[in-house]
Image (cartoon, rainbow, N blue to C red; front, side, top):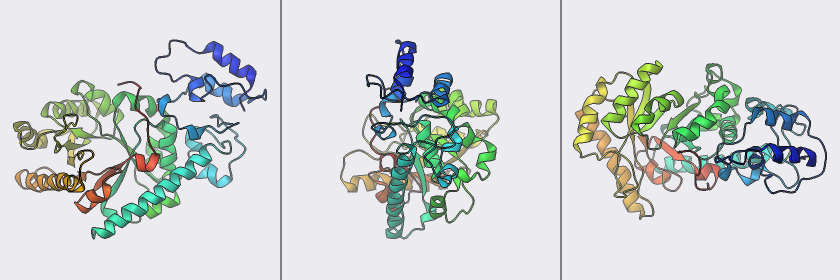
Length: 372
């Protein structure tokens, strides 16, 4: 419960020039809401005020995070979560020993149900294609969702996430420091939930938590992208590749990349024309960019077309992979990242080794209105 006197204090202190709309009242969805009761919440709300840890995307803060008359507030000592939930959830990551009933616990349940259904569908598509489930990697596309949602998904065993924008993830990244730390990535229980065992039976050890950029990247943001991400899946020019190579050298890391291939006539789609001279130059040069580790190809199928066209797009990417592997033996192009919530089954049938799922996992998202 949020006390009336505390709400008044928050309202008086909020910055009226907040263009990001990420202030505390928006975060708790209290802007314009009538205060409920006058019971004090003590150190929890004060901690939020002190830390200023509002979300990165207010327009996409799921309504399910707020109950009718009570809401979770980050802090310590929440009283309504069982011991198993404390030890097998995002509470330790977010600094909350426990959390209020009907908030994170309910979102974890909904996310778990979505993940169970999704995993059943992926397994079914693999069986239909005569492939092993272990051949297909699931990337959770978390764009527009806050760090808390990523932590919830990680608690269920997901370890690979995709983000679209450098600036958006820059705001989330500090809240994911624990997940990305070496100690966590070497086998923290947060990444070895029971569901992870089902998804990754081929790998008994929890996978390392990783976040890749899957959206278009401007070359002038290469350094910041290399600092933030564990991989760039949208390399579409030699210039960008050279910038990333230089940035990776400065950061002392070897950066995994995918080449984004444009196989759709839509003008809004990014990617490299596989028949262009630019593609030829990039493929010739990549083996000499020692700070980059080329791992494969990525594409996005056209929207709203018959299945036959979608299938042709995925089949074409596989064809280019086979051709380029022969022509450029110094490149490893094992990854085929293709297929999303609406077409991943077709992608699996056509050879996808990585599928990128957002809506089917996290639910429908609203339009992004945050930083570019």
